[in-house]
Image 1 (cartoon, one colour):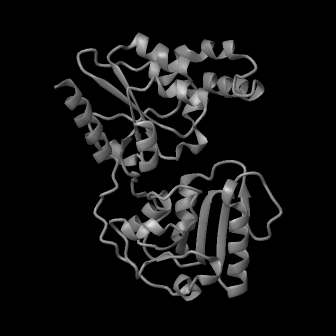
Image 2 (cartoon, rainbow, N blue to C red):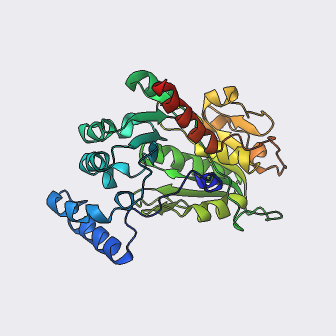
Length: 310
């Protein structure tokens, strides 16, 4: 998602939460034994000095901005860690970029962490209106690895990767409909393993390189939306960037910049899907020219902080 930032001279990708390999192993071992340090919160403070962000050499003559994604930030970056970071480095500004809806983060624990942030951006316009966040659409960096290249043969008609939760039963019905229609489906669901014939369940996150490899072999990407979420998603971004067809139940997709009815099909009910669209091999071209790059997000954040200081 953020790989394009490596091209910027004034941006550094932080990498591991803890740089030292031995300390990092011990940290995650204790994290596992204590239920993410819930059973022994005092132990975590012994690891603070080893946190990568504590060991950075910040420019005290300039404003330093640290950008967090919401994925996993509560687990590692609790309010104590962030508060100590701000006290130690008063020239640092903390920014949170919410790439998921607040429905999964609207707890007191998360709100305490958010209060430590100097600015919060969200891809969900409804959350921006409700919580006062700043809106910025989903960013995406094209993968330039060998996992995705020219001339890769199509092995599946329809590919899905995403969490189950409120979508699990719907995905099961969708998979059965694919089987009935002769559609070669490749569904990968993140969540607790279940007995759903044909669907692959993952209890650990799928490496993104593997996602790209599977996506490259597919003719069409499936997007099933979470309840009450209708903003552009990573699946939409992947379809546009890698020129793949997209089958989605997000009605708002018709309003998005890269919507092309010949390449993107919106459905309401499973029984209304035109499976010939999914199976017909075509070469979509959305005319993408890097518009999703996170480089533009960084520039926006810099502009917003500069505007505050005027």
